[in-house]
Length: 237
Image (cartoon, rainbow, N blue to C red; front, top):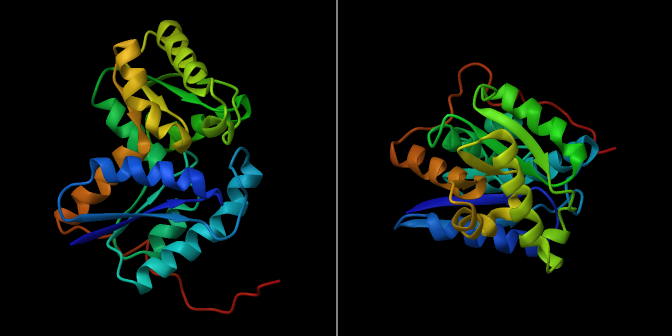
């Protein structure tokens, strides 16, 4: 039995439910997917400040998972907050949804577009594309200018995101679209049918990446950068 925790780095439980359902839908037989809502941090992550404040909650969740024998983790926020630190803490693989989504999209065509939430997050997506060596595939990054929490509450959310994806494909001449927010995870299939191009949800991609690594018996290397952090005193403030 393989246990995967899908960690929502924000504190909004309704979003966790959506994320966990999408992850469970693609998980294979014998895989138990559990959605984990961060205990501390922002209600949504839409800035560098939000992202920084979300990291302690992510690391707390991973530490708890280690105590409970969890096999691997998905960080379900497109900023991949705390990814390197979580890999230091975890024994099993830790995958961020931006990393997984871009990698998956690069296999489906020669170029993809990213559609994110607010315009202010475009730069963060660009930094991640550079970090993951995806610049040659990423033809453009676009915002639907809808706050994260509105993705669940606004009845027009799917239409707004779909039209942003359509415009991105037309402007960039892309072969695929990467959805740049975990809150868009359940829109993937509908948008793909509407536009006629592959639309990649990072939650599903990351879940299957973790599942594959665990199945292959691979774990996070503890030699070098991802070695277990040295034991020391930390002040709570």
